[in-house]
Amino acid sequence: MEANYTRILGGTEYGLVLYWPLDEGLGVKDYAFDVARQDGIYQLNHPEVGLNATPSATVPQQLGLYGVTDKNGNYIIRGIPFQQGGTNYEIAPLYGEHQFNPVTRSMFVSPTSLTANNIDFEDVSSFPMEGYVYYAGTNIPAEGIQFYVDGQLLTTDGEVQQSDAQGRYRISVPIGEHFVEAKLGNHKMVGGGRFPDTGKYNFDRAVTHDFADSTLVNFRRT
Image (cartoon, rainbow, N blue to C red; front, side, top):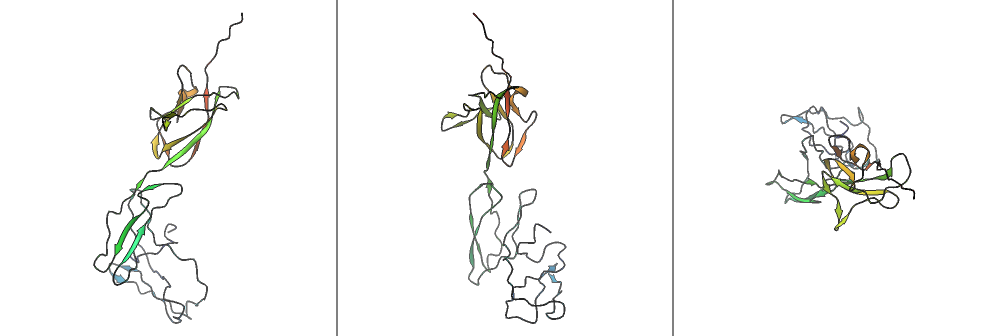
């Protein structure tokens, strides 16, 4: 599978027919081992060097020791090596621009501690949303338009987040499903100044979106 080709496997993955780690060392010229097994039974599909495999001094990029979360956020890292007295590891979640709490967690693996459960992390990411607010049908910037996430006014260090003199804005939205509103007092915004128009948007990356202010101003000639 594409999700597995760069990482070390445990050898017990479902449907795994053979697994050649090829970590016997360059001094081993005659054999390699298949460590794939199902129900505790090794598959024994060993390659024979010189017959169906040729040795090479080229060392490929090292495989990673990691797991990949499933749709429920669960992950398993198998085949973690350790010394006889045990080995300490730092587990760190990585996914693009996402941020996690905690950043890392420690894990100790030894002959008497072969399984580590509940090594949990929380995705605390937020993503930028930026763009411009113009008066509808013009390129005239609408300054001072305020922004709300799920109905809550956005502030940073006590300062209300709003569009600047060029109509530009940049806000930060937490990861997950939310809606954003641009509004100000008696101003009338196109589409209610809402993003998305209905429902919520899953913020898992940066978003660019422009708002339009359809407020009309009356001029009186004297």
